[in-house]
Image 1: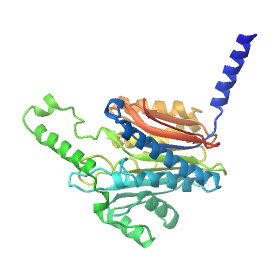
Image 2: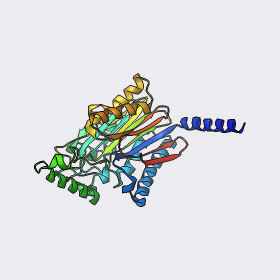
Image 3: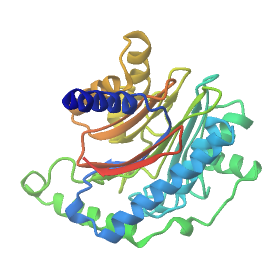
Length: 334
C-alpha cells in the first residue's frame, strides 16, 4: 500500500510538472559556455540578470499588459547589461564599431518590426517595436533606422556608450588569429574554418504569452565579433531568427547564416501547425537540421498553451522561464 501511495504521488508530481503553464521564456545567448570557465561571481551575475529580466516581463503579464510589452521589458534589461551581446554588451565589427540588430513580432495579427545595423540607438528592441507600431514598414536599416528612432523619441546615445573592454579585447584576439591565418598553411594547421566566429553567440531573446492568449517574440543582438561588409544575421529577419503567430513564438541564437538558410523560426512554427509537432520536437528537428549543415546555437519557443522549449546544441545557453504563478527558473549549462 505504501509503495502504491508513493507511485501515485510520483505520477501526480510528473503530471503537475508537465501541466505547468509558462508565460515567459528568455535566452541570453548560446555557445561555449563552460562551468570551468565561469567564476562564482560571474555565474551569479548572469543568473541575477536573467531573473531580473524574467521578473520585469512577468510583472507586465500579471498587470494584464500585452505580450509585446512583456518582451520589451525583458529584452531591455538584457540590452542594458554588458553581460550579453546586445545593446550595451554588443561585440565589435571588423572596423571596431558596434552594429546592432533587433526584431519583434506580435502573433495576434502577425505585425512585425525590425532594425539592422544601428549604432546610436540605446535599445534596438524599442526601435523595432516603433517600426512595427508607428510605420508602414517591417525593417529599417542603418542611418534611416536611426533617424526614424530619433523622430519617434527613442533614446539616442553616442557610439562610445556601447564600448566595453571585454568585447574590445575579444575583437583583438580574433584579429590576431586572422593575421596568423593569412600565413601559408597556418589556417588549416592551426585554426578551424570557424576560427573567426565568436564562440559565444550572445544574442538575447524573449517569447511571452499574455492573459489574452496572444504571443509575441523578440530578439536583439550585436551580431558576430569581427563581422565585415555590413553583415546582418538572422535576429532581425522575420521567419529566420524571430517569429510569432497565434500558435507559437520563437527566438533564436547562434550562427545566423544557418538560421536564415533553414528559415528556422518559421519552420518550427510550420511543424507545429501542419505536422502537429509539439514545441520540443519541432525545435529539436530544426536544430538538428542546422547542426547537419554545420551550424550551431540554440532557440526558445513557447506555444499558445504555455508549453516551452529551450533547445541548443552548444555547451550552454543562458536561459530561463517563468510560469503563470510567477515561479522563475534559470539555467546556464547543458
